[in-house]
Each structure stands twice: as C-alpha cells, then as structure tokens.
Image (cartoon, rainbow, N blue to C red; front, side, top):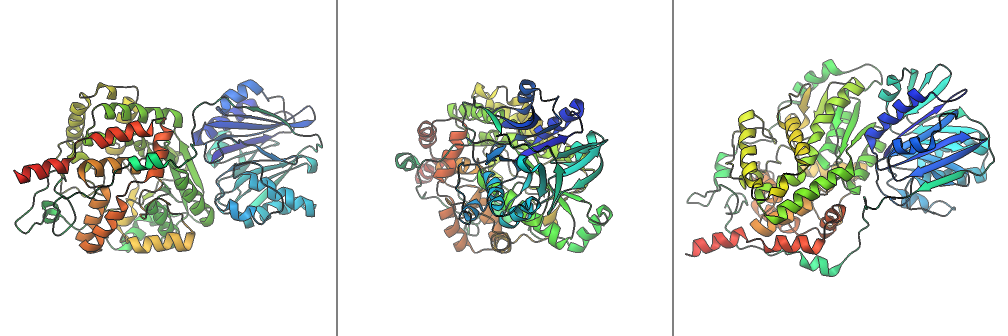
Length: 615
C-alpha cells in the first residue's frame, strides 16, 4: 500500500506544489519509493528502497513536465518495487490485489515478479495484444481484480495515462492548466486545486507525449533489514514451543484459573469475577444511534463518517454495519505501526475494495517502531515480568492520535469505532499488582488517577530492568496520553447499539466478503496482529491461560456460550502459533531459539500455586 501522486504540466512541473504532494504521500509509508518522469523525449523510471524525499533530491526532475511517483508502505513483494514495468507499460498502484493467483491462472502472459501490482500491467499487456482500445483497460482490470486497486497506468506508445480506482482512494484536480492526482483529496486541497474529482469505479484519461523509446530504469537497493520476512518452517524451532495442559483449578461457572490475578472462589467454586460481572453486551436501541448520527449525514455521495479500521474482525464487521445498516458513507482510517501482518492488510484491502470504501493509511516509521519494540523486548527478557508485556504493544496507541488528524484532513467529525465490549482483560494490569475495577464500563480504562496508579506500578517494574529507559519511552508515554487522556469528541461505539454476536460476525465476513482467516489458528480474533501470538504464548506458558480464556469467560457470563464449549475452544485457541511467533521475532531481528528458551525457563505460576495448596 502506498501514496501515489503526480503532476502533468503544460511546461514544467510546479516544484513547490509537487513537493507538497510528495510530503503528504509520506503519511502512507516511507519504506520505498519510485518515480516516472518524462525527460529527453522518453520516460524514465527511478526506484529506491529508501524514502521519496531522498530519491527526489537525487533525481531533481523539476524541469520535466510529467512526474508521477509513490511513497510506499512495504507489503508483499519486498524485493520488487514500483513502478512495475512490463513491455514498456508501467504502473504505480495503491492497494493489495487479494486474488492474484486466481487471476494469473486466467492470463496467458507469464508472471515475472513477486509483487502483486505486476498483475495490473500484465492484464494491460494481454489486453493490448488483442485490442487497440486502450481506454477499456481499467474496466478489464477492475472486473478481474479483488482488493483495493487505485492505479496510475502509463502507456508511452499510446500517449495515455490512465487513472482508475475501485474504492475511491484516488483524486484528480486542476491548477491553472496542470493536472494533479493524489491518493487523498486533502493533498490536492492543500495546493489549491479546483474541480477535484474522486475516481471510483471509473477511469480518467490524460494525454501525454507519445514515446516508443524503451523505458529507462534505475534501481537502488541498499536496505539491509528485512521488513517482510519470508516464512520458512523449521521443525526444531517449532518443537521448542511448549503446550502443556496445566493442572489448575478453574471457576465452576466461567473458565478463569486460579492463576488469574486477584481471583478468589466461594465455597461453590465460583470466582469473584463472575460475582461482580455486569452484562456488557446489552446494547441500547439502534434507534438512538440513528438519531445520534443524523446531524452528521451529508447529501449525495459526500463522505460523512470515519471508521478506525485495523482489518480485524470487529472493525470489518463495524464497516459492514455502518455502510449497510446505518446507510452512511464512510471512509476508513488505518494506523500501521509495523505489527499489522500481511493477512491484516489483505483483509483491509479486500473489505474496502469489495465495498468501494476509501481507505486512508497513516504509517509509522516502521523501522523505528520495530526497533522500539526490540529494545523493550530485550529489556523484558532480562527480567521477565507478566505485568510488563504491555510495553511490547505500546507503540500502537497512536491510533487514537491520528484519527484527529484524519478528521481535519477530511473535514469529517463523526468517528464510529467497532470495539468488542467483551475484550476486557483485567489480568494484563493485574500482573502489575492493580486490582480489577469491576465498575469500569469501557474496554480501555480512563481517568487521571487510574493512569497515575498504572504508571507508578509500571515505573517500579521498569527499575528491575533499566533497559526500559531507552529512546522509545517518549513514544510509549505519548501514545498512552492520546489513548487515555485526550478528550474524544464525535466519538461513538457501534457495539453500544448493536449486539456483538461472534457467529453472525464470522458468517457475514467470511461468507459475504471472503474475509481471510489464519492458517495457524482456529480463532478469528487478533489474527492480523503480529504481537498477539507471542504475548499469548508467554501468558499461557507462565500462567496457564491467555486472553482467550478471559474472552470466553465473558461470553459464558453473557449467556452466549456454555462452559464446556468454552473449555474446548480455548484448548485449541491457546496452542502456540509458530508461524505468527516466528514472523514477530523475525521482524524484530530476534533469535527465535534464544527468546523462546528464556520464556520457557520462567517459573510457572500454576506450579507455585499447586505447591502451596499441597502444603
């Protein structure tokens, strides 16, 4: 996924405006970049595995009258870059094609690269072998490809630039006699474009100089780190992962074990979490939400709400509800902090492509974010503490920060969140010594005193391993501020008004939208999150349970599931996800064997409890 942009000028491009386009495109990722520009009567291509500003400073294409480019968030096809070239046709593409294998099987031309975007150029190539109708190519591409397709296709021999999209993540505007395009409208507004058009389920054709010269290509590959590691199964590594069924006492009503922080049992064996539980999945009447959103509705096709969108099952189902049930016109917003897996990104692309919904991405500096995680994981390994596992996911809290930026950029205030009301995990702070607040109504705790207590406990734990006091600390603290302290406005939870039902959600996503599930687990929860498999392995290995146990316990209390069914599910869901754990440690450049051996050596909490009971 990337930000694409371009200027087609009568004379030479406007450097000031062009740089503004480039700057905004970096919001979507800076892992690699590419340019197409017209100079010396031919089209030239420059591709690099570094950021677009550095590439522009090197190329200096400002005397050209046509310059197109991209700033890319690396997804699949790491070794290949855009623009993608075949037979003197080239393309820059924002999105992920999720049915590429199926479409390649239909084509007669052969695949050359790993990058999914090659498919667009291959379809164009095959089409032109049979027809001279250049302007029919977009319809051909959009009819075959699933997932987000927002593309600029350059055909030098025909003197045509084709701009097309299936989800609206592409805008065209005019400034004087020049044509500009960008992945988001805001970029064109910033440079004063007029007559801005959203390109969706259609195409926009621009005449460009004809050239039969072979495309001139320059590539620079200097990156050492592997942003998208390729999975290679290692049987010896997989055998290191422990999965022993602990002999621990569980609540007779739910399935919480005796190792749950602050748990107590009455004489019938029912835990205090059950006694204090208040139903959370009792939504208010839907009519209230319809009334709340009414002032935000806009006439015609204008977008009227933002959906924070991770690609997980709850945000995807939330998108379905907002578009199909509420009848609103959403734009989705995704914050990619470096731990969104390829599966998560594919589901983002699949849903937005199929539903024709624009997706705005804010990408962190993925390399830096992963270095932050690595520093904190190294500190944790020196003094393993279950209460400090949250330090490994602290970097994602800026999700709450950037939604405010997206509100300003789109001029849309209403944001609707698909947060599962049953995802309450008291144990994550409980292992820090913080008693559960049974009166808390939100999944995320708020309030100054609660946060001060949490941070004071965490600070004491950090002193046990000084490695936590590293350069990532400001990122961690600022993220916590945006999540827990920043005032939120025009902010509603969809599942405050719609009952959360796992069976309905899974059926809708999988059978209506072809939503992808993971190959290494039966659950559909957190499967696009690169961190979940690792931290759940730690919790299970040390404490004999994971967040799946707390989630299924909440479903039991809500009357959604029997205790027997919950026990059967968690026995499978708690199994180590080798592939996902390996991906996580590879992205951090951590040695799998060393890390897992440290985890396996941590004293088991349930062993300690059993010894105390026996004595």
